[in-house]
Image 1 (cartoon, rainbow, N blue to C red):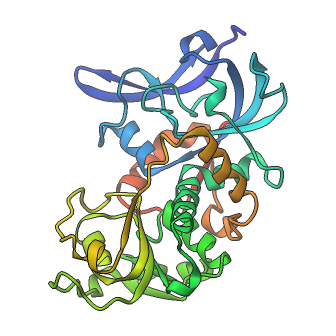
Image 2: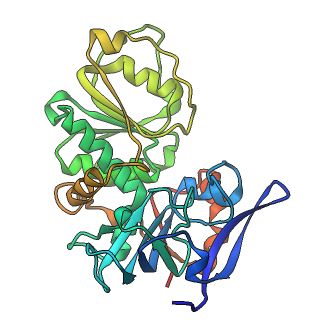
Amino acid sequence: MMKKFRAFQINEEAEKVVASFQELTINDLSEGNVIIKVTHSTINYKDALAATGKGKILRRYPLVGGIDLAGVVEETSSPDFSVGDSVLVNGCGLSETRDGGYAEYARVPAEIVIAIPNNMDNRQAMQIGTAGYTAALAIHRMEQNGQHPELGPIVVTGATGGVGSVAIDMLSTRGYEVIAVTGKSNQIEYLKDLGATKVIIRDDLDYGKRPLEKAVWGGAIDNLGGDMLAWLMRTVNYGGNIASIGLASSYKLDTTVMPLILRAVNLLGINSVDTPRDLRKAVWKRIGSDLCPQSLEIIAPKSISFEKLPDAFDAFIEGGVKGRMVVNIQ
């Protein structure tokens, strides 16, 4: 396959990140034994950091951007897939060490390709995407570690973001009471529509100063890090799990080991990029069943065309986007 196709490529010129549409061929892409005709991708905060140069995401240049893709198998030498299969790839080094999903075609190794669950189409798979997968992975790890609704409410921080929005939906569907924490006081109804029973405005929180504060939460999914994560550790009930999935506020953690020892609080690190294949398949299987989001048209009601992709990143950097955004590649 040697025809040319459009790709949104990120490069570095004179120590400055430059991103633009280019005409590529399959041989310009990273190695792989599955060629996918890409139909949809997404925009994540990480994608915006990569494309604007606001964060050092790419490990080498140039690379096609986009940490998510969904499409149809065009060619493959792998016995695991057939031409015409609907598949997805999320994380796995896309737009970090290998070419990503912002192109009309992708070439990837079969071991990172996942069959899209039978009950969803390509667009729905990307409404979920890396953000939804990360939320599901967090819940899966928490439940493997003994989390259940009877332990108490689950706090979700960074609640209006992609991970937070899908996490609220999934948790409430699973029967958990969900407490959403947000800095956006104008999004309370949005969060309640997703299933949050209560919304706390971040600036109204009193973090306290004691090594242990009153235990009120069953567990948490934290997008922020820093003072928020330290407060959650001090206020989660005995045996509860905190899934740490982001550092939007800070990578630092100033706390003590007392919650870990005296309350048996579990701090779980969630890495959605390098998940082993068997675990990745298991989580996507759950996304197609008991963790299937019920509010995708609330979380990701809008799609943009491939042509408008370059104009969409600034809103993510400025924190002006709620939920998820799908990119229609073709």
